[in-house]
Amino acid sequence: MSYQEILYEVSEGIATITLNRPDRLNAWTQIMDQELRRAVNAAAADDGVRVLILTGAGRGFCAGADMGGLSGRSTGAAVSGETPQAPPDFLDAREDYRGRVSYFAAVPKPVIAAVNGPCAGIGMVAALYCDLRFAGSEALFTTAFSRRGLIAEYGSAWILPRLIGHGATVDLLLSARKVGAAEAFRLGLVNQVFQAEELIAATRAYALDLARSVSPRSMAVMKRQIWEAPFQTPGEAIALADTEMHESFRSADFREGVAHFLEKRKPAFTGK
Image (cartoon, rainbow, N blue to C red; front, side, top):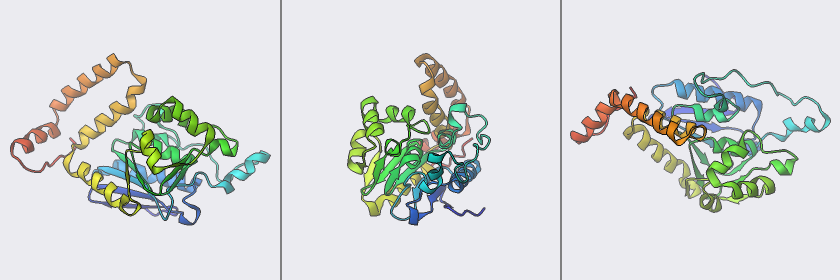
């Protein structure tokens, strides 16, 4: 499968997807949007992939939407390349997680954003819908929307408060100010910060530990529990956990989890 605006590589159970328009700080286009969806679908369907990493080429993660594609909006003209969303790829996912970037939540494998530089607009929202966000020391975050005369796009007004709280969300959305890596960590926007030159290696080391040591079945079920929880009462979440626990006891990964612990060896999980 060939791509124009992303790079896709699978190695050691990790699919690395790199937004690849470095001359434009990986500004988002419809081609990139479609290719990213194809690559995520490929990784989700590949039994050899256990973890996904999303990052950017060059010195940026994603500078937001390509402004050339937005310029026609002020005159009411059609935006170049703008088409309706493709049919949902994860048909068993709830409707909430079938949008332009919210579908990351429906992927049954961890998606880790390695934010290596400027991360703005839709690029920031894409990072928010990843399961984990690791930042390089040179990362910069901005919602950008209010400074373009826009609104909180792609569900950012829903996901941001769940990560950083109401007050910080109001600040970042209304002001669209730039937030460095250290402040992003204090806010809870990112999970860890690494020196810029160490970011990819550190992210990959974390992903390798998941790929080699953790049950893929457990990760898939727990990820679904986490992303479903905002729509559940505590009782519903507990009932689902009880059901999933009984199913876990019947799984091959549970048997392997007990066996490798007792036999003091590395696990050989299959995801079954």
